[in-house]
Length: 162
Image (tube, rainbow, N blue to C red; front, side, top):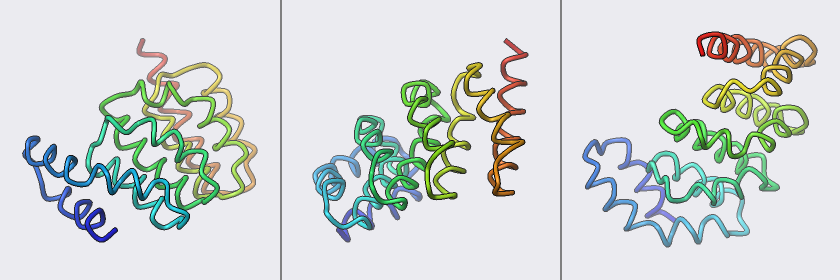
């Protein structure tokens, strides 16, 4: 999967949309194969590549990544989701129930924090604001409480400005 890893590295340097589209075309098959790999590292690379390559056509693959058994793969999918949803908040809204579950119940603290951070790019839904308020007060992990409180405040401000 070196070609996929190289493409991810090159994507950061590419500012031309046409060159980025060419890069996506070059690695599309490798990305699909890596996402189906038995090796969690290859799956994590594939999910991370979706965001780095701004591969909006692969959002269904990201949904699968959110359900992956590997915390590294789930985290990579969340990083890409957060990156892509900055321009397309509908991505967060489409997977909101999954993000709620990950934020509230995932056994991995980093995955929980990444799910919370991803929620900030979606619509300020009441159920999300309530969940984040609760996590901001009640979560055992300090970093998780802090992330939840921060996103809770951001979404409340977004809701108030509507």
